[in-house]
Picture 1 (cartoon, rainbow, N blue to C red):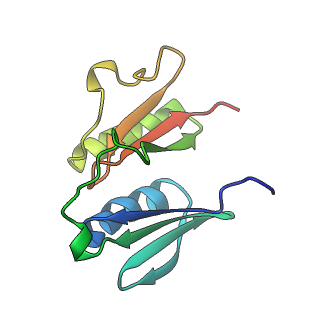
Picture 2: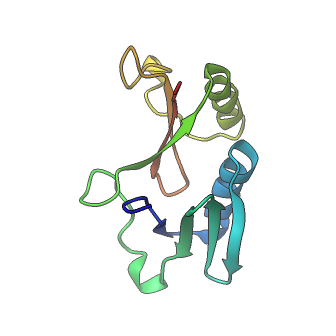
Length: 133
């Protein structure tokens, strides 16, 4: 369909840490499959959309990611139940993942916005939000 996202490609500081984090989230919690895997990257596919993570070249690692700078702020994913968000939140805590806005969880996005916000190994913000449609 015209205008749907084909893929998003993100350069990362440590591909092994990234794979450990994202492979669990995307394949175990959602229905993504590994589409491609090579020495410097990996892609995860769901339907016609895929996410690609690539190891940043050594010479470009001196500048770390900051979501407040120009560029990507976060990735947000749909889910269909509050239980999914609560179970995911527990698993994230067990894995030592940084949960954002804990004082407002699960309504950090507002009183009608049920979600969990957290960070990947490069501190990219990830959001899983209830979509009751």
